[in-house]
Every structure is written in structure tokens, then in C-alpha cells.
Image (spheres, rainbow, N blue to C red):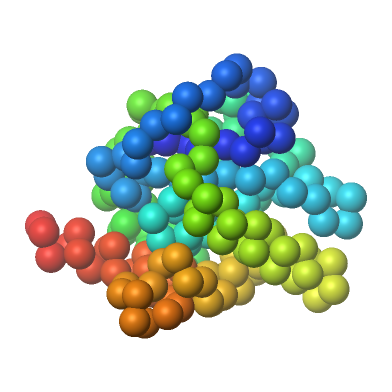
Length: 173
């Protein structure tokens, strides 16, 4: 499992210098993470690197790398269960929890899309006063260009992209 950390989040967790790693063989076990603030509170955006399927967790409860991993996996478990993807978590994400690596961001398109998701999350949290869990649902309906199934499609939502990943994995089994 790979957690791709931004520079600010890496400093907070004190994981040391990060290397660049290729996409995990299991796309469900590759998550990009970004620290952000809303209403003077810290939050962490967890986005699947391939689909940008996202959830938001409080940043306060992640003082070090070990605690971060436990909290992130708990957040992913709870969010996927509430979003009807508990099966995907149990079968494709959770089994890789024993081998966690930290890495730099995969590429600029993921970083740029996550920046858009953070702006949206901040608006939802500050202006609409939505809790982090609810913000994740809204972010997964946000249109993004980098996850479209084909270039001619133009845009897709993280929810649709994640569902495509689940469907493809189920077809393989």
C-alpha cells in the first residue's frame, strides 16, 4: 500500500525524505494525501490515486506516521462502508495494510485535481458547514477531466471512476 504525501503532510508526520514510487500494482492500495485547513482546523484529503475517489479526515488526530496510517484506514473503511463499497475495502484495500510505503505525488494531473477537490472541500466546510464525512460524498460527485474513461468523454466523477475500477476487478475474478 502506498500513501503519497504532500510536502506539508510529510513534515507533519515526520516520515523523512520521500522517494518517487510507481503506481502500486493494486490500484485500490494507492492513495494520495493532502493536508489542508478549513475554519482554522486541519484536515487530510485521502484520494485514490487512480480514480480520485476521496474522503476527508481530521488532521488533528494524525501526529505521526503510524497513527496516520491507522486513522486513514479507519476513515477509508467507514467511508466505503457508508458509500456501499465495503466489499471493495475488505477485498482490495485492507489486505495491503501490512506493507505501507510513503511516496511523493505520482504526477501533476493528480496533484492539480486534488487541489481542485481541496478548494471544493474548503467551500463546503466553511460556507455550507458540512462535516468531513459528508464532504467526501460531495467531492466524489465533482467532475474532473483527468479521470474520464476516454478523452472524448471529457469529464468523469470520482465515484464513477472508482465504480469502473470495482467492476473491472470483479470481472477479473
